[in-house]
Each structure stands twice: as C-alpha cells, then as structure tokens.
Image (cartoon, rainbow, N blue to C red):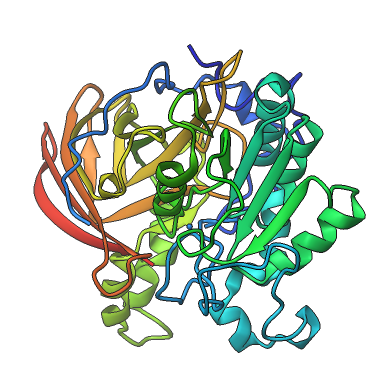
Amino acid sequence: AIPSFPPTRKDVSHEPPPPAKRRQLSLEEDLSEKTPPVPVIVEATAPVAATPSASSADQKQATASSAASNSSSNSSSNNNNSTAVDLSVVSSEGGGADERTSKDYYFDSYAHHAIHEEMLKDEVRTKTYEMAIMQNKHLFQDKIILDVGCGTGILSMFAAQAGAKHVYAVDCSSIADQARQIVEINGFADTITVIKGKIEEIELPVTEVDVIVSEWMGYFLLYESMLDSVIFARDKWLVKENGIVFPDKAVMYVCAAEDGQVKRDRLDFWGNVYGFDMTPIQNIALKEPVVDVIDGKAIVTDAVPILHLDILTCKKEDVEFEASFELKAQRNDYVHGLVAYFECAFTQVHKPIGFSTSPFCRYTHWKQTIFYLPESLVICSGETISGDIRCKPNKKNHRDLDIGLGLSVNGHHAKYNKHMDYRLR
C-alpha cells in the first residue's frame, strides 16, 4: 500500500499554504494531519470505462507549450522546423527573455519564469519528486534518463545527483534556453543534455532509455496535460523490460461540496451588476469549471475514483473516458457543486510514495476543479447522489476538455435529474 498523501511531516517541511484566490486556509490548521475520507492508490487498476477515441514543465498543466498553441500538448513549441535537433546547442529563436513581449508569451506561455516559480514553490509536488528519485538512487545509477517537458531542469538535476549516466531533458518551450544555462552553472553540463523541441519530432542519440521522468499532470489531471507526449516517448524509447516511469500511477476522484457563498460571489453576481441584468455572462460562467482551493470542511459526501491510469500501459485514447459513480452524503447539508482532484504515485520504487491534490491535504498549485450546479441540492445524511461523467478533448482545441456531467437524486427533500455540459479551458 502507498503511504498516505502527501508525504509525512518528517519527509516534507510543512510551510503554511500560500493564499488562495478564493479563500485563505487557516494557517493554524494543518489540513495534512486530517485523514481524508478517500481511498489511496494501492494497486494498478484498469482505466475506468475508457472509450477508444482520439505535454510541462507544468498546467502545468501542462505542457511546455503555449496555452493558445494548437500544437502538441506536451511539448508544444514554435520551433517546428526540423526533426533533427542539434544536441550541442539549444536553439534560441525569437530573441532573449528580455526581448519577449506579451504576444510571445501567449504562444510560449511556459517560457515565463512565473509559471515555473509557482511550480517549484509547490513543495508537495517538487519534494515528492525529489524524494522518489533521491531515495531510489539504485534505479538511476549509471542509467539513461529521459525528462519529458523538463522546464527549468529540476527533475533532470535530481536524476543527475542520483547518479544517472546521462539525462536527456526535452522541452519545446523557450524555457529550454534557461534550462541549459541552469544545467551548466550547476555543474551538470557533461551529464545533462537539454534539447529544445517537441518530443514527437526530436531524435535522441540513443535508441533506448531506462527511466522516463515527467511532471505531465494538469488541472483536472488531464487539462493541457502532456500525457500524450509521455506515452509517445514511452513507446519509442523506454526499454521493454524493467522500464521505469516516474510517476507511474494516477487516480482522479470526485466528491460533492457545499459552497454557497462562493457560488453566489462568482455566479449569482451576474444577475444584478449595479442594477443591470448580466445573466448571459452568468450562463457562460456556469459552464466553465473553476480551478481553485476548496476547504475540506465544505465536502459533504465521500469521494470515489472515476479514472485510473497506469502510465506504463495506458493509451492516449484513455484521456477520453466515461464513468458512473455514487456519492453518499455524510451529513445534512446543501450541494452546490462537484469537486474533482487527483493523486499520483511512484510504485516502481523500493518504498512507494505519492501525493494528493485533495482538499483534505496540503495546498498544491493544481488546487481542485469545481463544477458548480445550476441549482443547489438539499441532501440528507445517508442519501445517494448518482452520476455519470464523460470527458474528451475539445475538437477545435485538443488542450481544452469537454466534460459532460449527469446527476440524479431521489431524496427526502430533493428530486433531481439533470445533465450539464462544461468546458475546461
């Protein structure tokens, strides 16, 4: 079984969580000490009802490419001119960082240092990767490592510290230019080669790698994520026997929350704006899931898994999935929306380790994803909310997600049966 998420206090220093956009968590209350009423990843489980169909530094979400680019979600880049990549010199097309404009960042959003600062300061994320690598040096000693969506190169340097023979760090964003400088000034120039380009288009000077490391996860696990690129790299370069992927497991959960005050502030606000009716915007806002921090005290049901991914065996079609679920109310309360979060685990190591983005755990930059309902539900303790969820990449922009959510309740006070369509973008 995997230890509770996030890592224990002795493994990670617990700084107070940073301010949330929507509410400030109590600095005196350490949410990580609470035991979340959710299962943790204990074994590889087949993907939930995946329907066949159809990249990071960060959502990260995501991908190393721009949030507006129509190229590959993992290593999207403006440098698409050739398949071969000069491994000795990292391309610096488009001028230096001091010459970039807002337009440049629009098409190369992961080149901006602020995104990487947020990810690096996420201790749950970064320290878990560090521990997974440094506590398992035997998996990296004298091995060839591929870092997919390397960003600043932090994971590549962890791997080099762990004794890797050589690390190939790939990112399509212009952050690769700074990553190469970072690698050099930290003394890893002979061990780490930074390659600027899409993972699907570059060539490595080796035919196989022993380990793939990647921080591919996005909001709602899959938004703007680089999973497709990780799968491509796995199938092309990872050794067939005993190949290792860090992390190798991911599970997404859903639960229900009472969040009336925030819903009023965010959505009902449009009903009366200085005396004017702006409900057309309210209708649009309702269809966009909100990525924000929600207090664990607001959760009113249990949490159930809706998607299992084994990164060693999953296919890119698994990003398009559907699942049914049932949530049981833990108390008499109101439901204003559903909350989704995910957990990731490193299970190919000597002592499995993982982290969670649960509202019961420490803050992460992924926060949680909230799907507000058109109407609030009155729920009684023990009653069940039945639902189904369908998720697939948007046809016009594959980095966006089209999410369909159906809910039904047959309770003492609430009779509800409705389907809602959302778009995470």
